[in-house]
Length: 193
Image 1 (cartoon, rainbow, N blue to C red):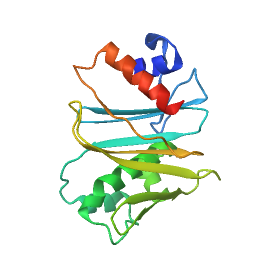
Image 2: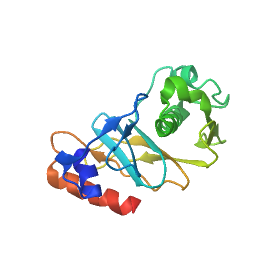
Image 3: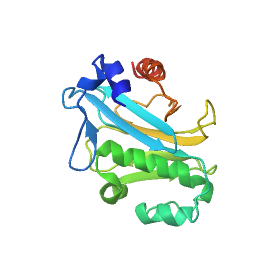
């Protein structure tokens, strides 16, 4: 992440300071206008950085069966729509996680502030986040097919002020090299401007 963020900010990655607020939200103390969020899931990394666009939150989860999925989701999101089926779990979970990461409140304290909706096709959408300023919140959830050695996944991004860009998730791990990280940073830079 330091390599990606350093390339985006044009700062040597070794000089980049990443700090964490008491609630767990990461930030860049030397770049107060930049907002960052990342998520990892079984060899996947989703990193979003925004310059001056307000807070962001992301989550990525490898597609897999989740036993008692709706029971799990209902424990942290008590207003789960009654129409929810098991296939709605990962999209709802990733969007909920991204929303609470954007606010910095985490699941334990922020889940009740998030309003999600399911349509008839069980697509999940973000209705809003209560108690975090007058600006509108926007969320995007995407199914990411398996490619480049990365498994299929569901990813979500939440931000305030503008609708989030399409998501790109890249494999991580021992095979990721500095050149790969530079290419990823260039793709990230072109996606977020």
